[in-house]
Image (cartoon, rainbow, N blue to C red; front, side, top):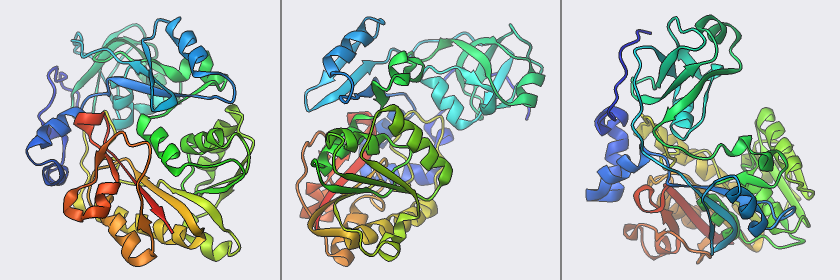
Length: 395
């Protein structure tokens, strides 16, 4: 990879997003599509954590975080949700020496994280102590600071802290480095994700199925809302993700969860006696609503394939939920194919009815898809910080 002087100014939207993403944004947001993509290019202004009320009250946790110098505010609709203010944007000094990082690392660094060796793609002949700029694969400057490892160490050993970022465009909390995280007192989670669990409305003593449970955020929140009672069954077909979920729920003190390595699209076939009071579907999606994005080259074909995949989970959920039971479907994107059109499929092919949901903190679904879409909840990147969709069904 050839290193060039990093671009100090943000790249144009046409350079950061595929023509298909721009087309989708135009379709959904009309004249505001540029505001949407510009918002997606930046971190959120408020970073949320979920207070683990198994172990501490929101008031006590907020006090501990404020004593660390963080600006914290509560969300009246979700008592366990605590928002932490993110500062920026700031100008950053630029160096001729650069460390090029992958997409995930660039986006993490944009929110204030340091650079670790596994995310480095190229680092020239950098030496410990050198002042360097971290750039995305497109050459956009993300932050700058001092190298901790040599180029040889970074690319040979592929582990450890490669660069300590001293100048950032945005400054936010390093939540996973806080003792409160390792102590299981909090979990980083978006407000939309917390809304989703409340919309499902799990009750103590019920049988709940989380069809796409990894990495365990919503799963552990459901356990929290159930008061650690009843049965909470979490599924994922990836063994490594289940192991990650197991570590998270153990750290948070969740005692009513059973985890299984299984492709949940086939639960109705492999577990014919399984009947749930409520089912959560949070399937893989295009993730176009997540912020920040250093770039996103998603294609329309990928969106179509993902929508077909998502419908398989909906069909199975309709077969394992009890009559009168509740299903909640959520995705962190804004494409109509993965949102309202999946709702249409659920009604047409699966015998499910869309019902009103509470709490309702977002906007109504797209009106062009009829009255049932208005019962769905959309979050828009330029209005609500992220792009997200929630639908609630009753069988």
